[in-house]
Image 1 (tube, rainbow, N blue to C red):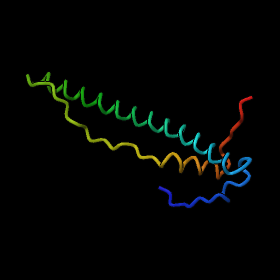
Image 2: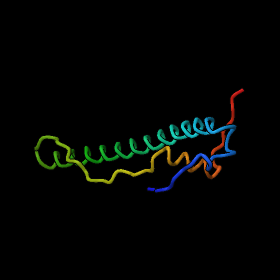
Image 3: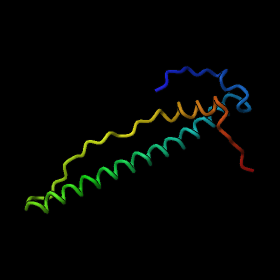
Image 4: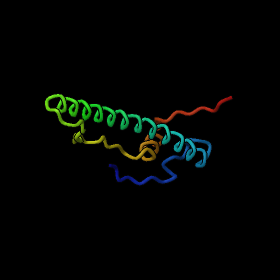
Length: 100
Protein backbone atom coordinates (compact mmCIF):
# COMPACT_ATOMS: atom_id res chain seq x y z
CA UNK A 1 0.00 0.00 0.00
CA UNK A 2 1.17 3.45 -0.80
CA UNK A 3 1.38 6.19 1.78
CA UNK A 4 1.50 9.15 -0.59
CA UNK A 5 -0.31 12.41 -0.21
CA UNK A 6 -2.23 13.93 -3.08
CA UNK A 7 -2.87 17.64 -3.38
CA UNK A 8 -4.88 19.60 -5.95
CA UNK A 9 -1.62 21.00 -7.28
CA UNK A 10 -0.64 17.51 -8.45
CA UNK A 11 -3.51 17.55 -10.94
CA UNK A 12 -3.20 21.06 -12.38
CA UNK A 13 -3.35 21.01 -16.16
CA UNK A 14 -4.90 17.52 -16.26
CA UNK A 15 -8.35 18.94 -17.03
CA UNK A 16 -10.16 22.24 -17.49
CA UNK A 17 -10.49 22.62 -13.71
CA UNK A 18 -10.13 20.58 -10.52
CA UNK A 19 -13.82 19.60 -10.52
CA UNK A 20 -13.48 17.98 -13.92
CA UNK A 21 -10.38 16.13 -12.72
CA UNK A 22 -12.31 14.82 -9.69
CA UNK A 23 -15.08 13.50 -11.97
CA UNK A 24 -12.56 11.81 -14.25
CA UNK A 25 -10.78 10.21 -11.29
CA UNK A 26 -14.12 9.00 -9.89
CA UNK A 27 -15.10 7.44 -13.21
CA UNK A 28 -11.73 5.73 -13.56
CA UNK A 29 -11.92 4.50 -9.94
CA UNK A 30 -15.28 2.85 -10.73
CA UNK A 31 -13.71 1.12 -13.73
CA UNK A 32 -10.75 -0.10 -11.66
CA UNK A 33 -13.11 -1.30 -8.91
CA UNK A 34 -15.11 -3.35 -11.42
CA UNK A 35 -11.94 -4.96 -12.77
CA UNK A 36 -10.81 -5.83 -9.23
CA UNK A 37 -14.26 -7.23 -8.40
CA UNK A 38 -14.17 -9.52 -11.45
CA UNK A 39 -10.70 -10.78 -10.46
CA UNK A 40 -11.84 -11.51 -6.90
CA UNK A 41 -15.03 -13.21 -8.12
CA UNK A 42 -12.99 -15.36 -10.50
CA UNK A 43 -10.61 -16.30 -7.67
CA UNK A 44 -13.46 -17.17 -5.30
CA UNK A 45 -15.21 -19.17 -8.02
CA UNK A 46 -12.07 -21.23 -8.62
CA UNK A 47 -11.69 -21.82 -4.88
CA UNK A 48 -15.32 -22.91 -4.59
CA UNK A 49 -14.92 -25.32 -7.51
CA UNK A 50 -11.82 -26.84 -5.89
CA UNK A 51 -13.64 -27.24 -2.56
CA UNK A 52 -16.58 -28.98 -4.24
CA UNK A 53 -14.33 -31.30 -6.26
CA UNK A 54 -12.36 -32.28 -3.15
CA UNK A 55 -15.56 -32.94 -1.20
CA UNK A 56 -16.98 -35.10 -4.01
CA UNK A 57 -13.74 -37.10 -4.18
CA UNK A 58 -13.82 -37.70 -0.42
CA UNK A 59 -17.49 -38.68 -0.56
CA UNK A 60 -16.80 -41.18 -3.36
CA UNK A 61 -13.94 -42.77 -1.41
CA UNK A 62 -16.14 -43.28 1.61
CA UNK A 63 -19.88 -43.36 1.91
CA UNK A 64 -19.94 -40.08 3.79
CA UNK A 65 -22.20 -37.16 3.16
CA UNK A 66 -20.99 -34.55 0.66
CA UNK A 67 -19.66 -31.67 2.81
CA UNK A 68 -17.12 -29.30 1.30
CA UNK A 69 -14.24 -28.21 3.49
CA UNK A 70 -12.89 -24.71 3.00
CA UNK A 71 -9.61 -24.50 1.12
CA UNK A 72 -7.25 -21.94 2.58
CA UNK A 73 -6.10 -19.82 -0.38
CA UNK A 74 -5.07 -16.21 0.01
CA UNK A 75 -7.46 -13.71 -1.53
CA UNK A 76 -5.78 -11.26 -3.94
CA UNK A 77 -5.02 -7.89 -2.37
CA UNK A 78 -5.36 -4.65 -4.29
CA UNK A 79 -4.73 -0.98 -3.67
CA UNK A 80 -7.87 1.10 -3.35
CA UNK A 81 -9.40 1.99 -6.74
CA UNK A 82 -9.38 5.73 -5.96
CA UNK A 83 -5.68 5.65 -5.09
CA UNK A 84 -4.87 3.83 -8.34
CA UNK A 85 -7.01 6.26 -10.35
CA UNK A 86 -5.35 9.29 -8.73
CA UNK A 87 -1.90 7.85 -9.40
CA UNK A 88 -2.79 7.25 -13.05
CA UNK A 89 -4.08 10.82 -13.37
CA UNK A 90 -1.03 12.24 -11.60
CA UNK A 91 1.31 10.40 -14.00
CA UNK A 92 -0.74 11.48 -17.00
CA UNK A 93 -1.78 7.93 -17.93
CA UNK A 94 -5.51 8.68 -17.92
CA UNK A 95 -7.01 9.63 -21.27
CA UNK A 96 -10.51 11.07 -21.51
CA UNK A 97 -12.71 12.43 -24.25
CA UNK A 98 -16.12 14.04 -24.34
CA UNK A 99 -18.89 12.41 -26.33
CA UNK A 100 -20.16 14.63 -29.10
